[in-house]
Amino acid sequence: MSDRSAIEQLQLARLQHLLALVADEDNAFQRGRVPCTVESLAAYVASVPLTTKQELAEDRESHPPFGSNLTFPLESYTRYCQTSGTHGDPLPWLDTTESWQAMLDCWKRVYQAAGLESACERVFFAFSFGPFLGFWTAFEAASQLGFLAIPGGGMRSEARLKTMQRFEVTVLCGTPTYALRLGAIAKDMGLQFPKLKALLVAGEPGGSVPEVRVRLQELWGSHVHVGDHHGLTETGPVSYQDPQKPGHLCVMEDAFFAEVLDRESGKEVADGELGELVLTTLRRTACPLFRYRTGDLVRKRLQPGLSLEGGIIGRIDDMVLVRGVNVYPSAVEGVVRRFPEIVEYRVWQTTMDQMAELRVEIEAAAEQPGLEDRLQAALWDQFQLRIPVTQCAPGTLPVQEFKAKRWVRA
Image (cartoon, rainbow, N blue to C red; front, top):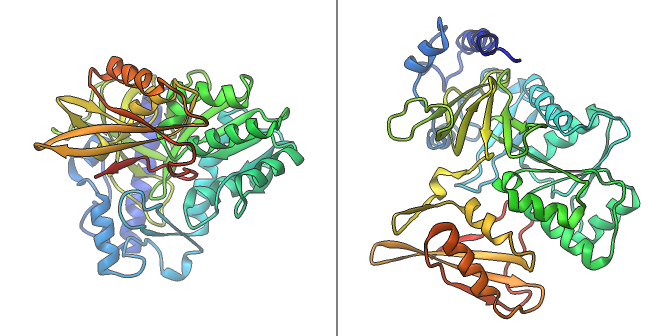
């Protein structure tokens, strides 16, 4: 939609339907938290409290095993998934067939925004296919679009690459970290993928980090489209990359009412400012969330649809204040990826005299004299901080394949 008022009218209509449904079905978790109806989006924001992940976790502990945020009787639910556990213990999540389909419809738009609409697409999923939601929704949405969906679970990296080559895969889905690793292994193996035209990456901020995008195209080919997107198990797919503006994620506002709030005041930030993304699910009615604090730091852009400039800049909890400078993991990765010799890295966060300190370990395919000094200089230029860098022997650092956990708090 191109008109802001039309977007908000649709959001209000869907919100009113959701509130009425939750009230009629007597969703126990939402009882007393949300009204039966609202007259406007402003009235909704003013009257409904924010929802936190901690509240969801406590609800599941109080009402095991699935919690009480269920709009329908338990026998109506057909799909189980769980959060990745990146931040806290994994949370179980249930969906009805209808709510699951609402998420698949959102995933289809991720593909379509990347220009993937032909039934001849062959999509390879470099995932383990555990209970994490993103694997399954991506796979099933591809199937519904008529794509050949090829699962890559239970394979080593070399086997995945050979499978991709054998079946002339056109699209690779995975995390930015694993796409980088596969590209490096493919280069070492001398493999070529002439039919590959798109990398769809998510799970980490890297897909919207310019240096990561450049490195991915260096490995896979300058003609290969790098498409970022994002979502959460709690909400489903939320955004897709703006086809005209790489590094901008368009929020699917017909499926979500999104707010970008200042952490201190709790008020909506102005256009162009940073804030926390807060989401209300408008179509995933089986386990609805009202004003859910995602913990994602984003930069708000209205044009007139809502987009997130720079993608997901970082997790609010992951920001580190180092001698007065705010440092986000995505910013550090952006500097590291300027050096193609670096195949892996790890950041150690320590506390000295009640102050946070960082140091970086790097690994190259073969030892590179002077690489530490060059990276340390680049980090100084970026942050005006002296961040010590040491080089490890090849094969020393952990291999990252799913959501990378490169930051270690010691």
